[in-house]
Each structure stands twice: as structure tokens, then as C-alpha cells.
Length: 418
Ligand code: SF4
Ligand code: SF4
Image (cartoon, rainbow, N blue to C red; front, top):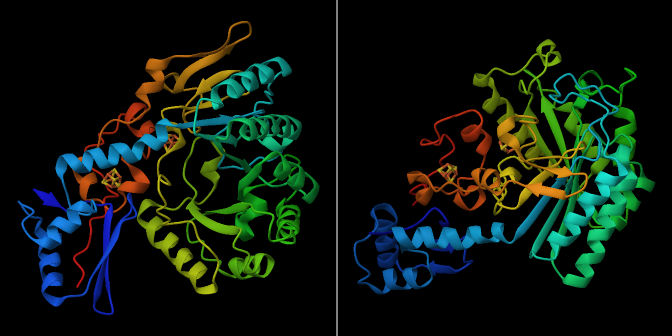
């Protein structure tokens, strides 16, 4: 049976149907009324044989495929992940903020110089074997160890010059210390993508400094200084907005729009606060599940209305594949543990290795594989999200929480549009 897989999209505009493969970038246009009718029949019901010119062309362009082709196409697409080395470094687990919803312990553990050098030597050695290298900085608060960030990022950037791999470096930071001087230094070292959380008018309550002071004013000053950088300074900042129950303060977005204007180097990502662990989150008014989707949708609509870019619902290739599920991904903790998932820190199933003071990096390859790809669900073949997801969204659900993954709540089928 031949069918239109989830990675083939189609749309009819002004009497012509454009059929496109999200994987192969192939595209055809159909405007003849009879062929359009035939296309819609095939899109809806599939076909057993390729016995018409239209089905043959669709098949040649890999827009119409059989079940085993779908698996081959997706496997080929997924092979990009095999060629990617994805490392997250937590140079410190201490933080200068005390956010009540944070699940981390804030123990002031910081990498020793010896440990940092061992890790950098390992990364430098590994990254020359891959086509893509992604280096992410996480914490604790990584800007507290800016010197380490600059040293390691610069070293990998230099290796890129020599070996030609594709390199991207990003940082999840609270943004408090990210003034223009530090931003420029990090940019020169190759750190070009950031996630900074700003919780709107709740911010000083949900993201206080360790001293108890508010932090919004300083962060917004830092953001404003980034907007003044010349347009050829090519970076991206995702401003994450954690929202609480009933949080519909859209005036905040008007203010944000005044600061960042039409600068497409910034986007907003809206996320309801969840019980991510710890006791202090219980004092916050967390959204009940029944409220979450509608609330986020209203935020997304408002952002669209005022022209701010929004990352919710973005379906770029691999964008929903969690870093933990990449086959060559690892997180280096500040104490030398090597783990996969940044949420399940210290869980025994999360640990895939450690840095031995004498022997260096030791990885348990079996444990590493446990976090990787585990096949497709039946629905994946027809799901329009398959290129962004590949059934690799969250292995913690399967490995640590023991959730039965046979049914997917996020499945979005192609809609039969005429
Ligand atoms: S896991 Fe769910 S969302 Fe992902 S491709 Fe499969 S059906 Fe779609
Ligand atoms: S909880 Fe799931 S999605 Fe989040 S980091 Fe862990 S594995 Fe990834």
C-alpha cells in the first residue's frame, strides 16, 4: 500500500495543490482538475499500485511511499543525529537566583580546574569525529563561570576552523550577568544562541536574586543593550515566559515589543510553570492541566497580534527531539558525573558515566544506548510532526517514569483539505 507519509505536506491555493516533502525538499504542483481529484483520492485512501502518471511522479519524488520506504526515509533523515556530538556543560551548579519553581539543589559545586581540563580534552578529541558539534551551557548559572565558557567555546571554535565541522554553541542563562561586555566576549567565542527566562510582571517574585532583590530591571537593561548591537551580529535569544494560573497580563508583551521592536533575533516561548520538583514551587499558583493549553494559546495569539516572534508550535526539523535522546549526547555535571536528562538529575537511570581523576571520561555505552531511539509508533508514519519529533521527544517518560509510550497524545494527522 502506497500512502502520503506525515512528511509530505500539501496545500491548495488559488486552484493549485502544492505537494512537498519536508525531508527531501521535493515539490510538485497540480492544477489540472482531474489530476487534483485523483490526488485527493490518493491522499485520503492511498493506493495499491503505481499505475497512473500522477502516482508514478509522486513516488519518484518520494512524496508517495510504501510502509517500508517510510521507515527507510525516516532512518536516513534520523542519521543526522548519529553525526552529531551534543555536549551540555554545567560548569557550576550554584546560582545567583532563588526561583521558587526551580528543581535544582543550588549546591555551590563548581568544576575544579583539573576536571574542566579533562572534559575539554575529551570534547576536543571527540568533536573532530563528527559533522555537527553542539555545545550547550547550563547550570546552575553558567555566567558565574564565564571564563570557563569562553575558554572551552573558543577552543572548539578553533578546532572547527581546522576540521570544518558545523558548530553551534548555546547557553541557558538567567541573563543577570549578561551585560554587553560579556555578551560580546561570548559571541566572539562562538556562543550565539541563548535562552533567558523573563516572567513578565511576576518576574521579581518568581525569579529573585539570592539576596532577595528583584532582577527584572537588570535583565531588561541587558536585553536592551543586545538589541542595539549591529544587525550583522548574528545571534538568537529565546525569551522564555513561565506563566502561572490565570496569568493573562498581555501588557507585558506590549512593553517587551517596545524594547525589542521588530528585531527578529528575539523570540518568545510561553510555558506554564509545572511542579518540576522541590517544596517552594508549592507556594505558586500553578496552572491546572485543564487550563494550560487554552492559556498558552491565548498568549501565542496575542504575540502574533503584536508581531512578536513566538517559538511555541515551531516544527523545524529535529526541534522536538530532546537533546537527551541524541545518540552521542551527554551532560557533564560540575562534580564530574555524566548524565542524559537535565530534569532527572542524580537519578541512577540518568547516569551514563563519570570523569575519573586519572583515567578521564568513562562512558557506559549500554546505558547511553538505552536513552536513544526506540522505534516509531504506528501513528508516526502519518503524523505531520514526524520530522520535528521522530518519536524522540522524551526518553525520561519511558526510562525513568515508566510511562507506556504506545499511544501519543501529540499525533497530528494530515487534514483532508479541499
Ligand atoms: S511520537 Fe507522536 S508526535 Fe511524534 S511523530 Fe510519532 S505520532 Fe507524531
Ligand atoms: S524530561 Fe524528557 S524532554 Fe526533558 S530533558 Fe529529560 S528526557 Fe528531555
